[in-house]
Length: 498
Ligand SMILES: [Zn+2]
Image 1 (cartoon, helix red, strand yellow):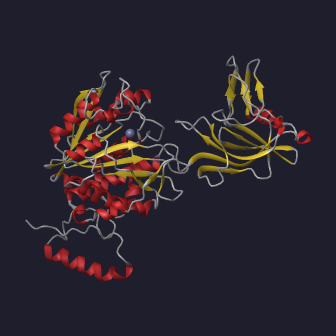
Image 2 (spheres, rainbow, N blue to C red):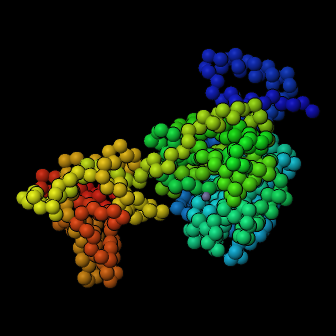
Image 3 (cartoon, protein in one colour):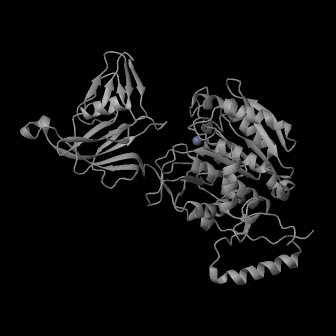
């Protein structure tokens, strides 16, 4: 059998060398007899999957990504109908591989007939759904009629094993934990969760060469010294305290180096690397020690991307590229230095909203009074897990802070925070709301649930009156005046012009 030339590692060849390179490649392909049926994979001209470039892959992705997954979470009821429809397609083998603590099915989807096995599992933490969307995008991609030549190129080499939701009970509750309140990813050794036992049993029976441990991280990570969000973070987990390298861990590092090259073309600077401190009770670390080349992929935040669709796309792209890279062993000649060059994740490198240069202090007449002292602060806001509720996270000098959304209130004066007490049924229209804002009311005290919101503008309502001055952990509803007139509202982290 003729062995085809592998073209890995040459994605970023210099322009000057390009002509010579192309001539050499064509020559090599002709010599090896592979030109006509070379598998479509990641090649020197940027081919990825069945597409001839990342841009082409992306445009194909837009047409076949699983619809209705652009949302903040994915529930078991979102994926079960998709999985139940798969057995009609002979390409995919579906089995119920176990049940959750509350007896929800956990499914295992297989595709391909090769002797080399690749295992990917997602949503082990129920509130981390991004990669679940990506694996369904991948299933659609594998099944797309236009990609059959690509599928044929690896299906006799690899078998993919996908568990798209390890923790359905947690997913239903939008919780990290399973129904026992246990973090499944800290149960790899004690194995008290049925979900953890399912995962381990499957891994032991498959004996995969590569594994993809798919998670979400909090959106406040940035990369290295940059102010860029870590939209994707990666790790080849350690299997002992010494952080030794075995063949599997080296292979994971080499693969990650390759994948990172591609992401840098799409979103330069948005990839971070996790600390590789050994976690004895976590699955990635355990699998790494079992000789599974394990890649942790964590989806993270991006600007103007509340549902992490950028990370979803990048994870999909990484999985497609991994199939090629593993099938064709493109990672073999990579160095682990490329992996080590990926900047480390920085926690708390970015906040949701930063309101800068806020002048607080309401009575210029009586500045002697402690009550009325003027001061200048920056205020950072946290939008909560669902990004729908701004609370005050920090008050003070955050002048070097970094935020997904920033407002500079220089030249404005913060008004005393004043609530409108709802004492009878009130249907709040946009017009009415703006009137109340203009009168100095920035939120609603609605003890008896009598406020009906009929505006698309952000509204803050509480049961109790808020302090007049910004206070930590309280809801954020600010009105600012300029030259004595109420001019701008920042309500729930959003700017409302008045
Ligand atoms: Zn997780």
